[in-house]
Length: 458
Image 1 (spheres, one colour):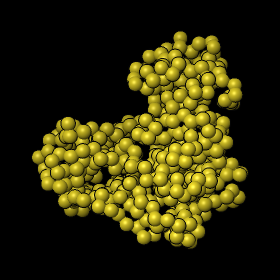
Image 2 (image 1 turned 90 degrees about the horizontal axis):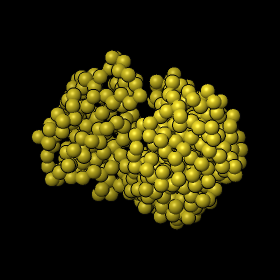
Image 3 (image 1 turned 45 degrees about the vertical axis):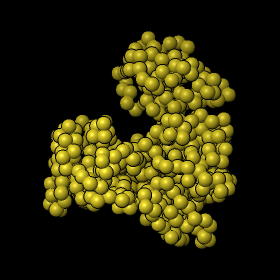
């Protein structure tokens, strides 16, 4: 297999260079004096930015874009073999690799690499760590799965030996990584269009943990029922975190301020260390912060800078993100699309001042909706009122086996005040007519449901 070496810059061509993750990798290589070209189906602010940095961007994907001076072709999972550039690269016999493989190889060029894995919380924990590392003047290179204001996007190119990235388990992408620090936040059933069952998921996480560098550290949620199973047979140094006081890093004296932001006393190896005040909500973010603190401490950062970094973090886009107000009604947007994430968000919402809680939920993918149908209804019932949009298909065709009306039926059966509308326009008008006073409105899901709140505010 072709291997990326920062000491030997070559010409790399990206098929689909305008994507969030692909563009970030291209920018890292541009900074390392690689020659970068790429194509996308349409121009965007991302492609214009890459052009300004020196990349050659082609709009439209054609075989003629694969020139003889290209040394390596990188593609995403969305690119099919019949894609003209993919086919041309194959015909020319050029080295080719997926985005995940490239990310793993880029990581290998940094001495201190950190990979943040888990079913939930990857983007938030990676963002917390970004704030902490910047506060400590560590000058990290960062690849995060959401838009983070502190770095002006989803990528930051640093000049140190520190590399921080999310590590997604979908299609086993994270098995291309061999980090010095592996963080495992939690493990649950998800992406059941790829994994067979929970045992299959745990098997992948075990392999991910086993690929931690021999002189590295695994930082893992010690409250999980299968932590020992994930670590079985591994000899790498391990640090646990969680709410249970038996963990290496834990929290007690948990409280929430008038805005719902969390605070707690940090306990390290059974000893009270310091009071931690977060600017984000929910117990789940206490867990995320414990993982971030444990990792930063392992790197050698002092607690004062760690806490200063955490206190500067106010969340990422689409994670309990304040969008605005209509009169006294507060509009929040949240990316939650798994029952556990929804429960965490709605539990955090309890600490936020409001009269009644309205949730507009857009299920994400047919397979996930079908797999967790009863669980979705159960957790959504934590809201006072639920409005359902159609399922956001994402990468999937409609299997005809499930729809939002199935969630609606279960919610009504449980006595929850619930509604379904087939269009965003109908949802927006319904909310304008019904939401009132000091109510809290949360648009929720991984699709385009955010547009509903923005349209109402507009």
